[in-house]
Length: 537
Image 1 (tube, helix red, strand yellow):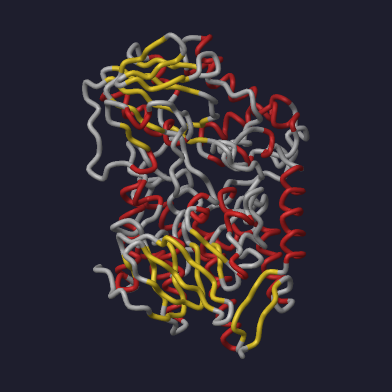
Image 2: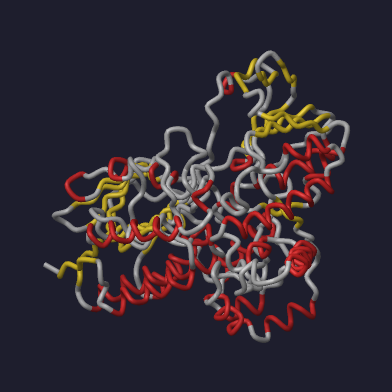
């Protein structure tokens, strides 16, 4: 799509980002007869699935659950091919949805939002694009995604490296061939765990630089059984409703027993069964694995034994075992990750023993050791949940800068809006389940809450909506109180922003889908309790 003329124009809503949140937001607002426009930095839709094209990229939620549910026809028509969909298949799905519902003409590609400032006297936002265009809109919806701003490490000489540097979150669209190349991968999070087995197949040598090991469980990915698909589609709506009652909003076969309500042998059998199935559902084996450290330790010991069984060198296996609670960092899902360390051309560098000091031309230097390489892969994750929003110059009432308000940590009421910024909505923002849930249903729940809110405002002639500071403070306090009952704050994770140098460490997601959805519904039923609605002038 070509950029519009640079003349000012007033519309109902600007949506920032054409991932799954932005696509559905555009659909919903159009259903209400409103004029909305998506601004997207990339040349296509898909959000994180547009940018993350690294080898082995795929979802860690089963594909039959990681999909829209707003259209029964769409659910029935679309056919996923595998248990865990690949990046390419998910991207094709997003493109299909845009085409099927005729949304492409509402998206401006290759364009970035530089700033959005609230014009208090006019009760609308001025949105500035990198093209020089300005758009005026009553509402702004930040559909920028939780994992969309790549985190680049602060390593001396990185920008002057004489070899190619690739970030897994911004991968070349035509791919990278590592055949006969010496590759250095920095980081051992999800993208490294997914990509390194494939890189190892190609590379002459692979050196993995690990600061903190992660827990990973086999995916056991496989083609979907047509019988299973038909059975699930026969009761898709009922199945989706059942998932809303589950802690993570996903079908993890939740067990409501404590890990200590059974014998050691029975618990071991349950862990073995979960391991044999693979995937994130392991964390739902018992209801206290993420709430009780002693229960968590039983799972951690089990994982330790499994890692030891997969890695031939006991000393190396020990380095691959995290010392943190299982789950406090996102559990990873892999295909033959640990086994790569049994290959002679793959080595691990423990950065706790010898940190990276600098990049010198074609070498990664740790202390006095030089690792000469032909390519660097940064698997260093994202400035999660707030990075993309904070990258925009957002100014609310009286010129308040969002960067200033959130300097000590993000504050948002229900993760949907932030006080002092009227008519600015966040999709899966800090203070909502977001990354501790099945993201697509959580996106749908947020988009529907926002669109229902806008419809309510129009019906009752309200011009603006703004969270009350007291309600916001109380919600942020509640989010942290709930987090403190769990193991999640127990390590330096991206849930707290600890992976980004200089970022305030605050636990950002809300733990528990059912109570969160209930709270959102209660707020609406009470006439948008905790918000101030202004009447039309």
